[in-house]
Length: 391
Image 1 (cartoon, one colour):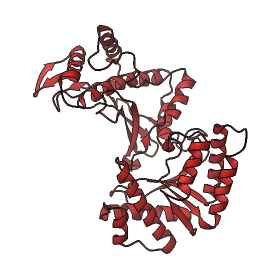
Image 2 (cartoon, rainbow, N blue to C red):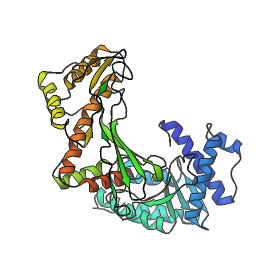
Image 3 (cartoon, rainbow, N blue to C red):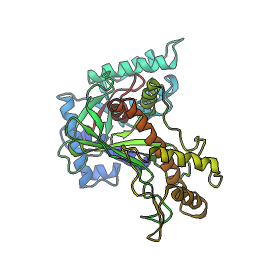
Image 4 (cartoon, rainbow, N blue to C red):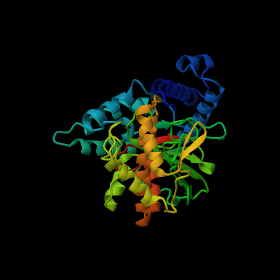
């Protein structure tokens, strides 16, 4: 719901308080109460909370009598067991729930059951995780224990959606998701919008869905201030599917797909054999990227945009070799902290272009697009926990 962790916590606690008041009392909390929880509370956030509450109420029906947890209570209790006894290292990769609701009269039973099934001698952590996920799925179906993932609702969206995730369907709900032809873009324009920087550091693409909507995706380094970093893929619905970001695609979903095809996903910039430390480039490294560009440049799948270098609004180069040489020079000669980060991100984006081309050659594009969609929703494999997504 926000990029800053502290701000996100306040917003999610705002949801927790607002939802509890509406579900349990039928009344919205007073503004003064909400402002104590989240100082950024305003009319726009009130509308988001209202839409979330309507969607949750529709899912719950007449059910009430819940305890609502985030920083204390059953949510950290479950997270602690997941990390300690089930091998979960990053909570959101397992289950992106932002708050947890548990029936008050069942809380001790739920906690006891979770403790019991994950504390059996001789059981491996992965088996514990599978047992935990299975129990949480059953409890969610019975509306006893509900992990809720919350997204800010666009003011242009009249109502929020509530959708169960990771309930065992393994991504079978939507089958007609495909790449929009010629939407794969990896613009190689350097310095046109701002001196010394690539206009973007991403590989962008658009997917079409059976509903007539679209989903925009981008693969890039999401921290340009880091000269060498991991490139992640992020999806955001548009058109009839418009709403909050679906999220970043799970590496678990990608790796399973690539393994089945005998492929591997592009490495991070820190591990790539031809992306050296800043200032350490050699001719072999340069040749690798020039060869990759020449291999891809005439492929109709990809649009590299204007391959050119600009400085102070004037074009000073129009070949990939010149783009590469200047980008290498800017890494060391320019004080802008994002120059190297955008550059290495763009190079890994080119690797992703090559990956998309290989997937297309194997006639697996629709399968890949579904992996991206359900991977962003964290709905692949028994290792992912069930939750109710409100978006």
